[in-house]
Image (cartoon, rainbow, N blue to C red; front, side, top):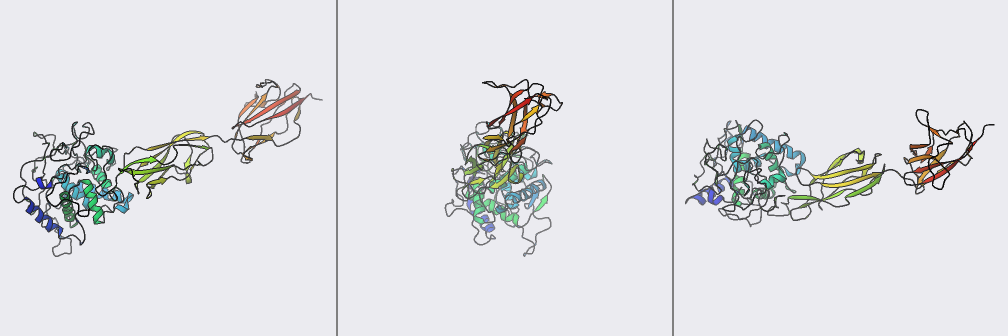
Length: 565
């Protein structure tokens, strides 16, 4: 949330001293060499206020104070973890389940990120006191919306309305919403359906936790590395104090926690046990700026206290949307490890054509780019064939998923046209995002021949009422056998502009009736075609049979009908 930690987390003469002492005590237990900030010496000192408004939550205010100094220890240390744990180490059941489910989901799609659920718990504690102490329904949706103050530039970032109030009920300025406090523009990009109900609801802890997990893993971060973890947290809220607070809770939860019933979690002190910040039933409207009431120093049990009042919001905001750029979250302070996927672009042709049964000459290729327009590596891209077609990728797949390389590009496997002619589309989408798809138009044309000829040389003669010997032709394309080429056979008049003849030799349809045009013919694998039986009628004379292929190749064959002896 916001970078106003020094002004809101602690007030009065002891503000800096108390906060610094708590941070120092909690930091002492961290592994050697684990920095509390991601950048090399460019973060503000403790108590300073960052002016960066490009963080995921718009640097809107956050609520919690530091965790208690008597953090639980891991079993086997000098003091074993108690069976029940302290009040602060308890996480409401639904909230804890959402964090752990997110860790499993992300591990299945981006194992290299190594997202720990304790990091989600730390951010959830800081942002909303674990969804206001676990006040959620059976599906994980908050009983009343959690809404931050207006991001109007008065103490926080200035972010003008990007959602027409759809998520936060404010059509003038954006507000952070939900248990993970996403700003509306970021939720539009990063929103997820974590509980499988078909909706992306920022007020649902499963949806919001998964969105936060995806956001923290953006780019090529490995959260098992201290520097990458710090960059991820700073991308959520670009404030040194925020990072230190999240880090403190992260270490606290890593030393042990336990499940408590929903609704029984510890609320931020400023809210009290009976008030739900931003509750729709609240009689006092949320303040647009941080609360001015002093907040007590952290108690041994560390009851978190909200700093600026926040309002209920219909949906949580997604981390990462900078003001003025609602379509995607901004890059983190260090662009190289903190890139944010901003979109996909076509890196090849958008119109493809192939003959039935052949492979398309060009392979589909997209380029993923970050907010600076540079290449974005390790983006998951899915190519999907859409439409009434039997075209497929290699091995018959209709959909394939692969990651972009270091240059930001992903190239789909070879696409092969089926026997069905006509148009279809292929869509390339970035997994886990709502970014616009790249669409390709593909056309499958019928097989063609540029030549067709009769294979025999014997004169074709039949007596009236009899049948002709078999007529065989062969079609070729560029001197190679043209298999599967459509052929039309028509008995024609001997005119300057031939038309279908109404007398002379004929074919028979399936009912045995005479027909003089056939259209459902095609060549075999060798490019050959043996015509159906040709009958001579009762009129002697010389007649013509014209064969035409797809592609325009034509041959005219002479048929002679002689009077019976």
